[in-house]
Image (tube, rainbow, N blue to C red; front, top):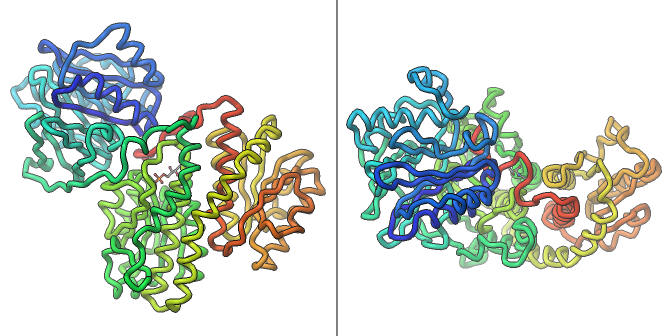
Length: 609
Ligand code: M6R
């Protein structure tokens, strides 16, 4: 939700901030704005809609040159996406941008006898800061006083017209990183905002305030004591954050999957070829004591978790639950010191998942994060982390995020099996070797993109589609349906094929497209039942699109379209089965004229509950 950028240095801050906002637009695209200080007053422009509207406003009425500026791209929570509700919010000499929700904004607003210019929860922060600085506080002291009064989650970034070369930012349960250049600093919700200027970044901790000038930064906690930060080097470059000739980031990210998966697997073997997870700083004895695993995640990451359950229970023989993070802490889950909670999150900032792990840790559980974003809040608040190293995922729909999460889950499952003696070394070696072959198989699947696009063309007038699968094909079906609904706004449902006769078959009407993921032939019973399901829906007039092994002649019999999958183990099949489903959703949304990277009402990282 919402992207924040700030800059202090010798460059033209207007350009740096607007360019940074464009790179963060995936975080929210309801409105955008920029503010700077000039001649002892705040100047700002803001507009509802995408950043192009802000650029038009700036072109129409240029901002004065400045070396310091702040900016914001919004995903609306309080108040509709209008110019007035856009950030920055300005109160006298103060300009503020905010990400998160100030839960007690009503009570705080009641302290002021002013007409608020917006319906937002954020504007009150500008008034609170103004009151403090007008009473004589420095901006940093004002920020410290204000955050003490705020309830909720927030990143706040403020600028004072009477101290124009400084910005001050505070963070609680909401992302904020600092980019370090030569005599210049950047602050942002995500490193993508400043990747073209520097790859050196500083991770801020929870409840910290950073004061930024071109001379340096000073980080303190909310009480004013010096605070510890962590420096890190961003392991991808500007090219990774650009479309590189693709029409959509999503399409580019789908095609990046073979490399992303290879990168997730990189460096996971020790000298003798055994599996090692260097980042996993949890002692083997502790992992041996684990009596239950709970995976918490949202959306696509939740579906990756569903696949992981099949693998972990099969390999490790420990009960593994998968829970929507948004439900987890509200149902009084049974968690103790022998519970291992695995939080799966591409962004590492999803508020529901973050709250779930905080709850789990309070109950004494150990938490492992599976995450793609270095320094994000979820890995920072976990006991250990497995990074997926997929590079930035900018399309709102998760694609390489999903497949690399799957790989990290498989690695974790195998590692637990190794540590707990549930598998012999050669068994683990065989699975690792197969995993290492997956990038090649995924590339083969991507070569069939044109066939998928042809199918999308044929089905583009359909208003409803179903997705069926069994075993790990079931989460694949759910993920295929999610992709289609979030991008093409087509009604799409995923079902466990075995459930068909318990209700969903009533949805089968003449001509409805049904995608069916067929388990590998090695799983005879399961496969036979899914083949029977294909016949059943075909007999009722469905147009069946079948994803099955190339050698599976029977699966082709009732298929209007057939996508051949390589011959891989059942548990690993989602890595290849998902590719046609991702390509289909991307192409369908393109054909229907929708913005694939910025689907309506969505934002990339959901940092509010
Ligand atoms: O960053 P996370 O992996 O925690 O995000 C979880 C979901 O919000 C995310 O997967 C969402 O469902 C995507 N839009 C799906 O494409």
